[in-house]
Amino acid sequence: MARTKKPLPLLEGIEITDYAAEGKSLARIMYGNSNVDENGVQHPLVLFVPWTVPGDIVDVQVRRKKNSFIEGEAVRFIKYSERRRQPKCQHFGICGGCKWQMIPYEEQLRMKHKQVSDQLHRIGKIELPEIQPVLGSVKEFEYRNKVEFSCSNKRWLTLDEVRSGVKYDNMNAVGFHITGAFDKIYPIEKCHLMDDLQNRLRNFIRDYANDHDFAFFDVRGQHGLLRDMMIRNSNSGEWMLLVQFKLDHENYDSDHAKAMGMMEAIHQHFPEITSLLWVDNQKCNDTFGDLPVNVYYGNDHIFELMEDLRFKVGPKSFYQTNTEQALELYKVARSFAELTGEEFVYDLYTGTGTIANFVAGKAKHVIGIEYVPEAIEDAKINSEINNVKNTEFYAGDMKDILTDEFVKKHGEPDVIITDPPRAGMHQDVINVILNAKPKRIVYVSCNPATQARDLQLLDVDYKVTKVQPVDMFPHTPHVENVVQLVRRG
Image 1 (spheres, one colour):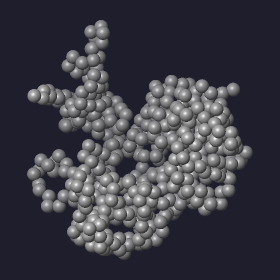
Image 2 (image 1 turned 45 degrees about the vertical axis):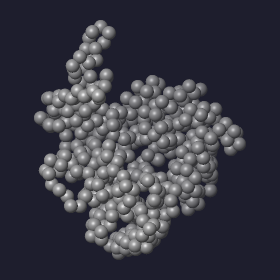
Image 3 (image 1 turned 90 degrees about the vertical axis):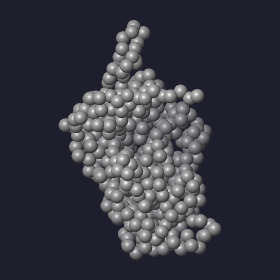
Image 4 (image 1 turned 135 degrees about the vertical axis):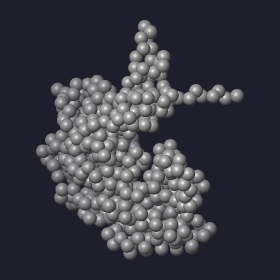
């Protein structure tokens, strides 16, 4: 017979005292007989509570208990902190996308600076210069150039909706996935992260689908016609919409006709869309990188502008989702590279060659390396579009492409710019960088924790000389960080 778990307690009148990682805040409390050292002295446990701000006084329902910390949920606010502000979004606290929207933006920037500083010092344990204040986003709202919405026949009901006992005849929803409920979607009426056209577009598709008896996708059953949508815009004024359907191939003609009817209605109602695309996705997930994309109207791409450059962005392309702030990020990276026009540059994890092409005008030659072959083809096209003739690109796993033999064949770099994924760089890649002995390294990171780990490994031959955090994602705990390293001696 299974043991009955002991109910977790409700902690009353807890004052939140500080911010923590991942958008949470914390308090330190004495808890039962926990956290007693070898001398019999009890120490406070850290209590993590999301959606709170230092200065809030709350009742907390404990959800998880570990030896060194507790996780809980604020179930009643006794007093709101004076450091709070009114969130702009009606969906705040439910959709999970903007965990810091109740915090004034200047304070968000201070907390991101503290996060970068803590991680570089605590994990890196290396000598560091003064860390510059976080470079704030040009836009606080409507800064994204890409959003994705999922469609589901299983709408997520909030706790208040469940308690109300209201029965919904229509459980279809278009919106965002709820954490911990992969098959349910929280319906979004208005999102402030992108130009308002995306709201009108999303809601039009939702209403059209309901009015025309579309089956919304069922994740568990893997059936339903309307599955997913991706919306992109650009600072050139162009818009892209890609709709994912799952056509029932036993009733293909009927499903195809319904899907194309929706596409025509979108085309007629939204002339702003210059790239109207669709995909028939029969897979068990919504990724479409390996699927053919069909053009219903217009082009299969849009263009982003950056200084005097144009970048082609297709439905499968990676491009920084905050266009204006991407320019600021790349300007920092270019400045840290200290190019004079004579340098041979390696751009690692080049993606679609954005940084490579951005710095090429101030370099002698740039080599870009990226894992995704399609991205490398985009990088070559972007060089061609901008008449950049001093770049070359290679596709493959970084640790397999960037070897000592590759460096010997193609030449030792004067400067290496690296912008790895959140996991950071593989040890083999770091070893090759050390062997290549560039004068400077510019390390752009979306995860200061793994960046700090890599900086410690590079510290044997390189000194960190500049640190500039850049905020790409207001109202979230995420922050980019750019570091300049100079070879010792």
